[in-house]
Amino acid sequence: MKTKHLTTVAMYLALIILSGMIAIPMPVGVPVVLQNMMLFMAGGILGKKYGTLTAAVFVLAVALGLPVLPGGRGGAAVFFGISGSFFIGYVLAPFLVGLALEKYTKRNFLTFFIVYFLFGAVLINLTGLLSMSIHSGGIKPALVAMAGFLPIDTLKAAFAAWVSERIYATGKLNAFIGS
Image 1 (cartoon, one colour):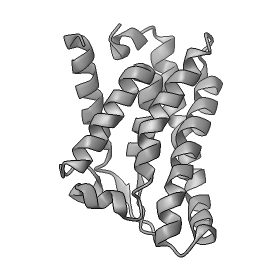
Image 2: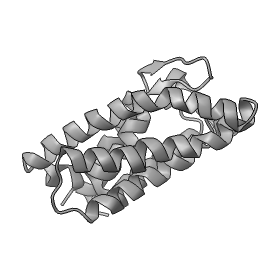
Image 3: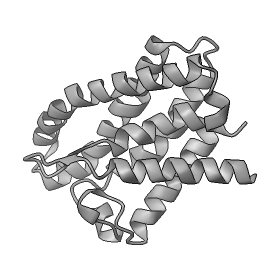
Image 4: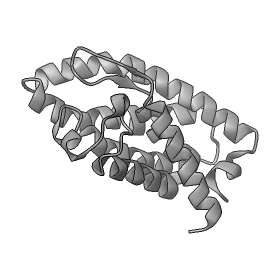
């Protein structure tokens, strides 16, 4: 790995951690955060390889107990709580977003939005259903809770698509992906 790639991953990891400073508590026990947006956006900005690497390092930091989650949380116990299975989506989303975007030579707002929404927001929410259903009394209450997150996550996908399209349109994408 080149120094430029390592620096890019480290800088994006810092953005993911900083985005955890903003958290809106929800009654279901899983807060609304910007970290999931930054994680699925990692696949669009850094590509599948470095986006997934960044996500994996973030999840490793959580596992090691570093206070990188909202409220300064971290540690392996987080993986067994109500938000535990979201971390599966946190690692899968950048890979699938990056993979999907490799197939499109025309990257505009709509392309980014569809990919971010399906392989980012929806995927992360679907993986989160497992732990939510275990800790909220079944699949039905978990689905109801997820329905509450979907409008907010749609807005996150739209914002991330707008930012990504701007980066791509200005030709600055190579600065982000380390090419």
